[in-house]
Amino acid sequence: MLSLVSLDSLPVPTKLAPANASPEAKVTGPTFVEQLQKARENNDQKKLKEVCQELESVLVYQMIRCMRATVPKTDFLGNSLALGIYEQMLDEKYAQEMAKTRTFGLAELLYAQLTKPAYNAGPGTLNRYGGKQA
Image 1 (cartoon, helix red, strand yellow):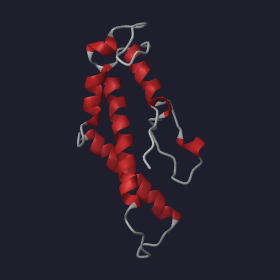
Image 2 (cartoon, one colour):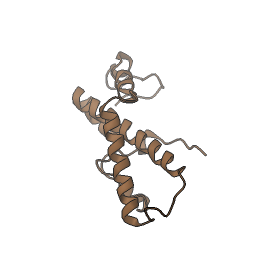
Image 3 (cartoon, one colour):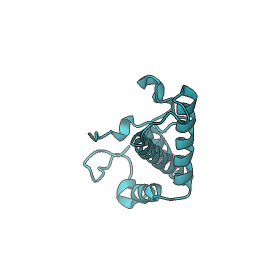
């Protein structure tokens, strides 16, 4: 079943924790929203693009991880912890490279949406969702 995740709680880690780590260990570093707000407060377009690219990388990683879970496991390479860590690191690197090469274009779409004038009306104004902008 697909569950929706709030962007407020979505971490944009520089390193993903191992799959068998506790949920607390997986949240490393500031969340997407915190990084986004900091980039917008400082009017740092380069950082905003990086944050959008990191979010795309996390989403692509999740997609790759789910795809890998559908492949039946065999005993050909064994089923060791080291192999699991290697596959996770490989999937993470694939996702980072796919985000850098603009394979999906999610980062560009998100960046374009976040830099529209409606989102940059200034502090205290309402955004299109009815909430106050930071």
